[in-house]
Length: 401
Image 1 (cartoon, rainbow, N blue to C red):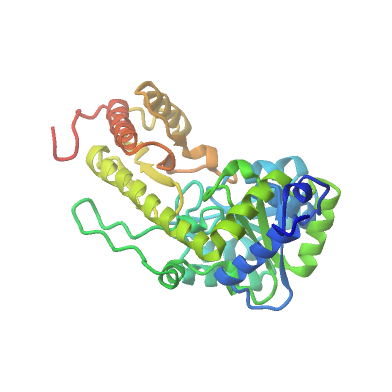
Image 2: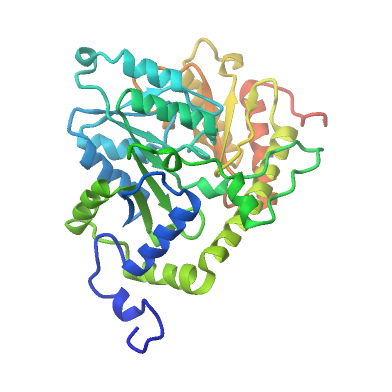
C-alpha cells in the first residue's frame, strides 16, 4: 500500500484493526453476498467474525438471557447447543424429515408453548443449518424455507442461518448404475442450482446469516462473516470491538490476496464449481459402497444433496438384545463393535438437541469429506461387517456372497 502496489498489505494487516474486519476484505464479502443472495431490503450489511461458532456465541449474547429457550432441529450441531448451555439457555427441539426442520412441528411447539412447564417465556431465536445439515445431511427445499420463514413471521422468531455447507450442494444422486446428471458449466447455471437462502427471502430483517471459509477453503483461517440488518450488525461490531475484535490479520491478508487480487469473484465461483464436482464424486463413492456393503434389512438412508455427512438409520428393534436393552445401550454396543472393526462413525444420540426427550430411532453419522476414495469404500465395508456381527446376520455383501 505504501508503494501503491496493493490496497491491503502486511503493514496494515498486522496492525490494530476493526471489530468488523479489514475494510478491504469486507468490501469483497459485501459484493459476494450481493452477487449470491441479493437481500431484498435496503439496510443490510456484513461484518466479520472469528468463525461461525463465534458468531453464534455473539447472537446468543445479543438475543437471549439466562433461563431462555432457543429453537433448533431435533438433531443439531453439538457445539451450537453446548455454546448455549453455559449461558443458561436451553434448546427446544423441532421434528425433522428428510428435508430438515418441519414447519408444522415448529408451529406446534410455538403455539403450545407452556411458560409454566418450561419455566420461561417463548423462544425468540431459531438456530438452523438449512443446507447439508450437520448431522443429518438434509437440505431444506425452497418451499420448506418459505414455510419456515412464514412460521417465523407468525410467531415473531429471529432466524440464525448457519450455512458453512451452502456451497457444498451437489448433483442429484442417480444410483450406482444410472448415468450421472451433468454439472453446471457456466456461472449463471451454477448460481441457479443453489437453493435460495433465508437471507434472500428475508423482507423483515429477521435473519442473521453466517457464512464461512471453513468448509470451502481452510478451517484454520477462522474467518467468517454475518449478514443482517445494519441495526444488528452495529451491535455485533460493538461486541466484537470489546471481545474478539476482528479475525487474524494474517488470515484476512491471505484471503484478500487470494479472493480479490488473484481470483476475483469469477475465480472464486470457479473454485466453488470445482468443489461441487469433487463433493459429488465423494458422496457417490460412499453411496455406492453403502448400496454394496450395508445390510439393507436393518439400514436405510437418503442420499445427501449437500454437505459432508451421511445419516444412516439402523432398525435397532431387530437387534437380538431388543427389548431387553434400551436404545442407548444397544447403540453403545453397536458403536463399540464398529470401532473394533477398525472404522468410525458418530452416534446419533450425541446430536440430540433436547436430550430429555427420549428417541425411538437410531442413527449413525458418517462423513466423506477427507478420506481417499478407497478408504471410504473400505470404511463402509467394515461398517457393514460390524453391523452384521452386532445383529447376528450372515456375512455377505448385497448380491455378492
